[in-house]
Amino acid sequence: MNSTINPGSQEIKLRWYTGLNPKHWRVLAASWLGWVFDGYEAYALFIVMPFVLKTMLTPEMLANKAIYAGIAIGITLLGWGMGGMVGGIMADYVGRKKMMVYSVFFYALFTGFTACANDFWVFCFLRFITGFAMGSEWSTGVALLAETWPNHARPKGAGFLQSGFGFGTLIAALTWFVLSQTMPLGQDTWRLVFVVGALPAFFCLYIRRAVDESEKWVQAIRAQRWAATESVDGEQKQAKRPFTLTEIFREPESRKRTILAFMLSLTTTVGWWAISALLPEYAVQIAKAGGELTPAIWGLRAALLYTGGAVVAYLISGFLADAIGRRSFIFFTYLGSLITTVITYQLVHSIELLMVSAFINGFFTLGFAYSWMAIYPVELFTSSVRATAASFIFNAARLIAWIFPIIAGSIIKTFGSIPQAATCIGLIYLIGLVVPWFMPETRGKPLPE
Image (cartoon, rainbow, N blue to C red; front, side, top):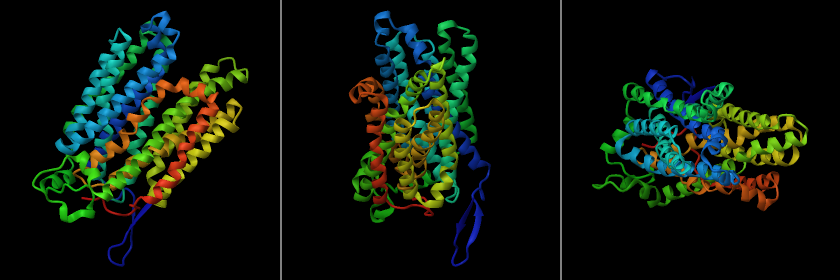
């Protein structure tokens, strides 16, 4: 696709990658790989959880294994949310590059420690610390890419960055598939998955040598431009820097943008964790009802197809957001999420059709629904608070949604079945049909300084 710039009255059409040099691609590679590692970590936990519980829980505890699985996943998500908030703030004070190095190193280190856990609660503690360290990688990556890539290419780069999470989940699935063929450590083979997850520590050497700090951030700090948006230029120079988290709520325009974007983020996060996480189990139920001999394999296939649909959406999201505008893209995302959730859980009753629906559902509820967070929030705020704002929008929702994996069983029981639970909670996507129209359109506009 081409981009158009208009210097004076003369239009010049550019290919989206015009002007990109090795420096830009190195920034994308570093940010993308960091998100790959995050995706690997998140999905690896889902995959190996049954084996972790089998080796760590007593027979009495195993009778309630769903509760303990929810605790481990929820605690990881809680740490991820808290770490993301802290790391995003720190990135606005110490720099994007330095925080990315810290994040990758420490989550790789504690992932390695997880492989040595010999008690369930020690395992949960290590997952919390891993999640805490992992949380800040995303916000630093999207801020660094946004501030280094040219305006016409930035949304595409952000979409490519976001695809890393999907590739990470696929790598986790492939890693477990290979290990499960031989089970070299027997029931403890799950530990090797976390050993592999420790390898990103070496990636820190690449970040330190190949990636430069954001010049936009450096210039904003030197010029003491502290305001969260450009709508208050007269207040930008202050002797003392305000705390970035309070700054994004201080002036009315910034506060409005933050709250509305958070509402959309919460819509995505609740929808994904409380609805799409039910998909593998629902696929197993459909497979059993259809008389399949190995129903469990259909749960894995549904998860892989769901992620595959998301990867496709990640890769094209930047192009579509530039073609139709940010607000229309977000509206289209949640409309598709709402419709495909109803189709998946109410209208599909054969396992073959469910696989098709899983791919399309992943395209919207995971792919597009998370892509806008890499593209849009960074365009709403200035460089001095950009990482803080992006991390708050992205991670504050997790501080609410972390409870859903723990109460998933109760949710299903309350609504009577997985389809009913997913459909009712899916109504949250209605928020995404309304909120975008109260936010500014940023397509084609330069990044706020």
